[in-house]
Figure 1 (cartoon, one colour):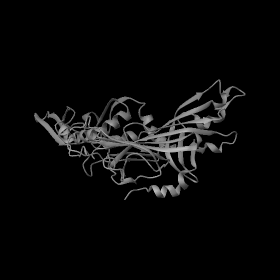
Figure 2 (spheres, one colour):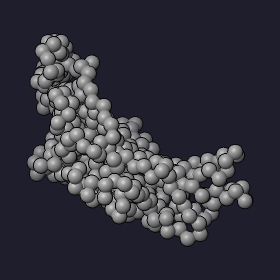
Figure 3 (cartoon, helix red, strand yellow):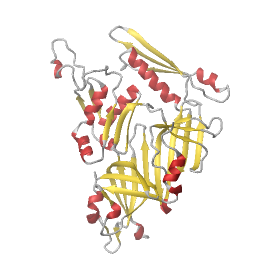
Figure 4 (cartoon, rainbow, N blue to C red):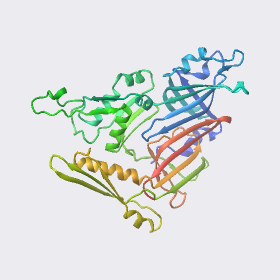
Length: 395
């Protein structure tokens, strides 16, 4: 059973006829500012479960004082200072739902001589990943297992500060397969410098000239995991682990347009991962076959089945590692087959990292799609739409 129902949302939002948006900056609704009216417009929230940051942009009208020739930055300091927490809500009529939580990453003061009344301040807000991209260092962590290493990174003070400021509500980190059931958390291995005893190796995980973001993404790719945030909830988990459909979509009055397509370019029938077990002096090789359906006819399968992708990586340490890497590569390549872009009337309940099921659209178009990106746009004239982007690995 799907998590949300379009007919129920139609009722909840009273026919989608009265779009609404609310923005909190510094913990205060900007519509409640007393000195003058702040009018937000051209609001775009781009959410993603892919390994990139989610971003929100919006403009603030009535923030330029034509009489003095300057922007009202002194009055607006509480709202527009870099690092200020930002929460955006969207909906219709009396109902709004949170669609974004982050911090002010950029501020632009935009002036137009010919239409000074249209001069404005543009805000760019980012989620936790924006902060994670900034640093770069090499160090040995305390953790022996990769999920513990991710936890160690996100336990740093800078991310604790984001939690204290309300930018992050929760952080959920699923154990990676390298951690045995009941394995000791955190370090647990040899002491620094190999001080755990004669001949005891120091197996703690290292970061090598990389940012927190680069490291976590590297770990996610190694184990076929996802790392993203929805609102203030940060998740590091196995990719596509939530298989319950977010929504079952049929031809519906809430759909404004869609583009569904399939392309066999880059899709292969088999993935091979090879490496060398240095300790044993033996070759490691894993094969994974693509068992998906590639076309409504019989022409595509022979073409794809004959295509092979061979991946060689000396960083793979075991047969198990090779199995995981092959699984990730095959899944990543398989999901190049199908794509969907669909524009709906604005519904903040749609988020990335979930499947949607299309029924009644005809053979081929009706399928299960994994939503990777969701864009919520509130534009001039009070128009609010939600754009879904997703992919499918088989017909």
